[in-house]
Structure formats: C-alpha cells, structure tokens
Image (cartoon, rainbow over all chains, first blue to last red; front, side, top):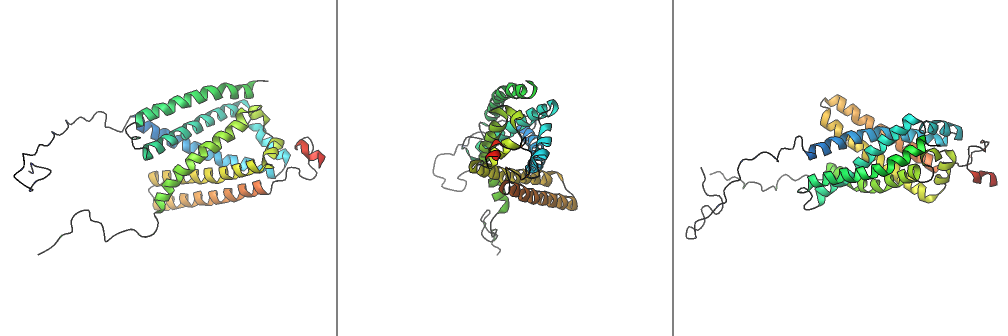
Length: 147
Length: 147
C-alpha cells in the first residue's frame, strides 16, 4: 500500500511530508438524486418537450395568415376561449421556467462559482418565476375572462 | 525491454475536424440567451400589452408583418426556436431510444419536420400580403382601405 502520496521517492532529506487526513465518508449532500439539481433537470426536460410540441402547432396555425384572413381569425379565435386561456397560462409558466432555468444552466456551465451555487440558483429561478407568474396571471385571466 | 507511454499523454489519437456535438452544445446556450429576449418580447407584445390575447387577429398580425423590425424578430424567433427545440428533442431521443432503427426514424422525423416548418414559416413571413385582393374589409387592417 503506498503510504506517501506526493513527493514519494524524491529527496529524503526534507522534513516528513504531512498529508491531510482524508475526508470522512459522508455521502449525504453529495447524492444527486432527489436534490434541487434533479428537479431542475426533470422540469427542464418536461417543459422543453411541451414547448416544442406547442411550437410545431403554433407555426402551422400562424401559417394560416397566408391562406386567408377568415381562416386565420377562425383558428386564432380558439386561443381566446376559456380552456385555451388556461392552456396559455400553463404554456407561459412552462416557457418562463425553461427560460430562467436555461440561464441557470449557462451560469453553472460558464460562471466560475456557478456549480457551487447551483442550489441557490435553482431557488432564485423559482423565485423569479413566481414573481413573473404573479404579474402575468391576473393580467391574462382578465384578458380571457373579463369583458 | 518494453517501454510504455506515460499515462495521459494523448498524442497519437486526436479527433480531426470539428466536434459537431460541441457546437450543438454551444448552440443551445447561445440561442437560448437570444430566445429569452425574443420570446419574452413576443409574449409581452402579444399577451400583456394592449388588450392581451383578445387583440390578436389578422389585422393585428398584418400590422406586425409589414414592419421590418417584426419581420426580422419573427424570422429569428422561427429559426432559433425551432432548431433549439428540435436539437433538444434529439437529445431526448438519444437518451431514451435504444433501438437503432427507431432512433434513426425519429432523427429523420425531427430533421424533416424542422426543414419543412422552417421553409413554410419563412415563406409565410416573406410572401405575406396584408391586403389580399377581394378580402372582406372587416378582417383586414384599416390601412388597406387607403390603398
């Protein structure tokens, strides 16, 4: 078993090498599963897929603008119904989370201390998301359900 | 006597050409930052400002698609968002689909649908006619009557 780590086999005249004791085998806090990082990852995937399929539909319904004014207004009218209004709320919620969490991913990747603060960054994402949703929700519900 | 290369001296095998997966990774982050601005602006102008979702009709979109600012905005939105979404879906396919034939089929479907929708969307933006001949004046923008 190699007892010495660094400097082994080098000069033997220097003072005895002191190696810091290994950290105690504490696993708690290092597990990825179940933590903020996992939920960030899971929600990023789910919101991403949802937004992607909406985007496919949204490009097609917007393309009706080239068909005729009547065709476009008929389809866009569906977006103004109560059920679709609630769907738009869910869509905006997904988009805002995906956008803010995407910025968090960029910070974790490129900011020198981003990884160390990934948990705080996740809670920051949720906080900013909550503030934006508090601003958007009443405004949109009034537009959909108001006179 | 046999000589063994010192470990971790990688000289012989270096990948040639550019690393496409690395550029895909970079694209997700670069386009992501731009998309945050483009989509937040899109949502604000369409769903928050003015009368919200109920203001959207043929005349509203015609007003935007005759303005070079929104033509550039929507073109960037279309291309950046659809490629970002399709590349994200490719990541999920690579993660979850293990059968080679199914994986190839899904990759093909993603590439084909992306190409078709990019061409369709771009044509719609650049061939758009805000005042189609013979259109009901009730549906088109007010400036059509002055032509």
